[in-house]
Amino acid sequence: MKRKNQMFTSWQISIATASLVLGFMLSLQIKSQAQQKATSLPSRRIEEVTNLLKESEEKRAQLEKLIQDLRNEVGLLKEKSQTSTKKIEQGDELQNKLILTGFAPVKGNGIVIKLDDSKQPTEKGENPANAILHNEDLLKITNELYASGAEAISINDNRLISNSEISCAGPTILINKNRVTPPFEIRAIGSQENMISALEMRGGVIEYLKFFGIQVSIEKKEEIYIPPYAGSLDFKYAKPDIKE
Amino acid sequence: MWLVILGLVLGLTIGFLAPFSIPIQFSKYLAIAILAGLDSCLGGVKAGFNKNFKFTVFISGFTFNIFIATILVYLGDLIGIDLYLAAIVVFGVRMFSNTTAIRLSFFKKQINLDKNYNKEKYLEGFSSYEKMKIINKIEHKIK
Image (cartoon, rainbow over all chains, first blue to last red):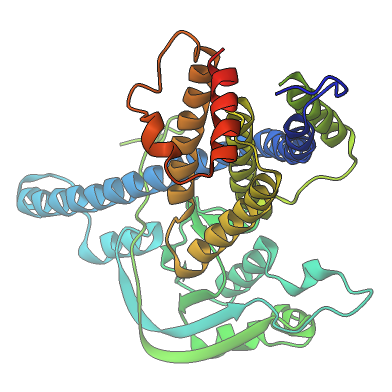
């Protein structure tokens, strides 16, 4: 019942104040949701792109396996047909070519180098980029290894061939288009003494890395297995120019 | 009724003009608090239209429901169950029933809602003076 002196009844006033509070909370919530919508769209795309990347990597692994199987088949067929071709390369030369091109898995004496980022906390004034491994460090090490007679090198089970790149891709390194992340394991088959002395010489690569706290460990091993190159063989530009 | 809407709009503008905002982690709790508050206000409006409004009931319901709803969501987070779903269902149902009651209260003159209401039985427990008051009240309402 409305009393004549009152403009608004008492319940309207109390509900109005409560709805004031409610409206306040509502607007805060709407604001925060609007903010979330503005920032969450890119993050949704990040999820999509990550899934796409994972799928592509899985597909690539499957295809690599297929390549390997097909190559084995080709090898078998070649063996069968070897007796009927005119120019048959001698066993040794073919073997060497297979090792050099990375198409044969190899084993032999050599060294295993393990590398990991520095665990020391960076002090003030120090550049934090010096505490992590870069692709240049891997390049320097592999160069030293080749220079000291390494015959086959693999980094985290990626066989290095003449066309292999060790490139920087944000926080990870790409080798043979595969992403590798620390800790790195570099396997090299060759003369153990030559390789170790080349790496550990004064003013050399290992000393430089250890100075910045990078964890390096070199081990001699009797039987190292290095896997073959698992990438694709597709030369679009280079054509062989062999005269018969 | 318009005062209520005015209050809501005023609250909205104050909130939009406020410089601070809620961190994203709390947005779930705030959402359920809003739902509880909204349900409480609608219940209050329904009571107001049906002349049943009790200030203590409304205010205690408003604050308590908001508090309890937030606690419920937090508890759900703690034990790993989405308890806020229960709160959403309950408040949603209550909001619909309240809005229906408000809608029907506008038509109370046309629809005879008191069909099953037995006046004699209801008046049995009261003194004659109170009976007179109640009868006058009811007569006035139906007019």
